[in-house]
Length: 363
Image (cartoon, rainbow, N blue to C red):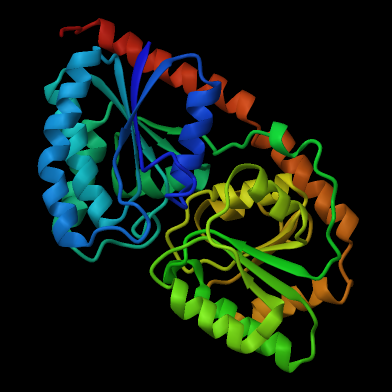
């Protein structure tokens, strides 16, 4: 089976993207013949005007690749963000014009859990979803959200997964005092809360190191504020990938992700758990389907700096059972989020969609 799969750049040095991380793994472990179609801006890339201009050439290239390679199925990865909705609505429609079955894979987004502010945008999102032959969401909670908004959709649950091979031989080097953030430096990730929490902890004389990796629109603001608060105890390492990323996770204790909105099922969070970090994450979207508060990590309310600080204080004062938390985190990934089971489930979905296509096949 030939599958055209969309994602931002698959180069980890160009994009801090959970979608790209997942697609790399799908291509590496899947049995299908995959063709990557790049859809999405590079971090720190073009603004909206250039983005719109790029879409003019995007659709003809997309259509030509479908026809040239004789693609059997189109797998479109998207998020319920305004620009993504507009772009991927046109991609789904183009795939239908080309006569191909389409799988739409939702990865969070601003309007996954939030109500749409624009009636027009909500209509475009609905048309996109209804035009797809099947839709993948990342948890039962997300399925409920989507089906409450729009009935009679073919929605499947497929939780994200990570490859455990890269972390099997990583011994824990952590001291219990290192916090890591790994992801896009965007306000939706709770960066303002991180700044305020670190200020609280510093004022209360807690000693810790904070290591930050990633890039994005708030890079300069965030790194300057954190350096002012923590001095030499703050380190910014840019974008990390591959072995370097796993080494950083292995050398860290606490993975902090106090997102405000927009999360699906964060790949970086699953990777941190696989590496034995204790996660402190906001109780948003599908995160709550993974983290059991106090058992394999900690959940906090979005925007709640005081609660985030209190959970971090529990860890930094060694009041938590570190060994059990780490063991449970790793076990959670091994049992529920391993790439092998994920690929089998995805290929079953491909097979079902392909079977539908055989009834009305044409090139």
